[in-house]
Image (cartoon, rainbow, N blue to C red; front, side):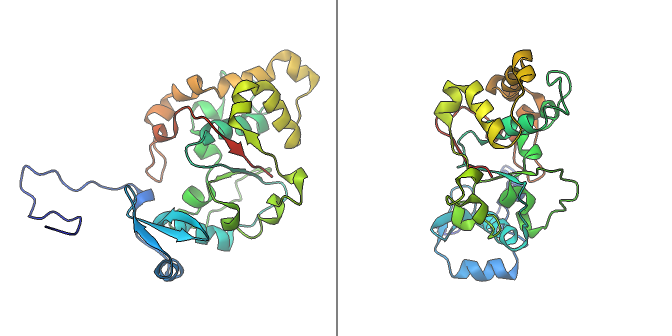
Amino acid sequence: MPTTLEPACPLTSNDSPPVSLPKYLLEEGLTLECKHLITSLPTEKAWVENHFHQDQGFWHSTVNLQGILTCQNHFQAKDTDILLVTTPKSGTTWLKAIVFALMNRVQYPNPDQIHPLLAQNPHVLVPFLECMLYIDGQVPDFTTFTSPRLFGTHLPLVSLPNLSRPQLSLEKPQRVLFLKYEEMKKQPKAQLMRLARFVGCPFSLEEETSGVVDDILELCSFDNLSNLEVNKNGKHATGVEYKVFSGEVRLEMLRTI
């Protein structure tokens, strides 16, 4: 019995050709630093990605590990950065949409007519550090990013770049905000206003009375986002289909600085 993933016999004309893996699943172009690190880590066969490696107590795919190393070596945090730290498949897309709409509400006062979220996926507007910006070892150019810069990550605290950790320290509670998904679902308006105060751009009384808060919640609602063409059929440059990110969830925790 064959012990590898290769076919036991040559492909015939009736066999399907090998599936072309998207960029985020490929284990190619690894740096020497990443290859050396992998040799020292516990490694297991994965069910989608080829391998998982345990680093600092957490498991990462090979390509994500490369992105983590590059991010740790090159990312320069700023005091004005806003970092959304969430677990995978826990409502990250929704939170990214809300924060982006919140921070850009003055620039786009009519979100039902013209708004980046109508044409672009939230993961493009608030990109992941390790699995989008720094994927395959590339170092991104941040000169086009306006302040405050918005980033997302699934990394645990111990794996964040060194310059980010002090700002997320619990010794500085004014720099950290925890949001629970249940609270966001139960009291979305109150939690959005709480988030606005935390990031330093609270809603004015005029905005509250004119329905700006409600407009943001409607724009970022699950029904609205999931029915947009870009989120149903679009695909990120890494090969990830945006519909993978869709779905309701039960729990969400947000940490932002």
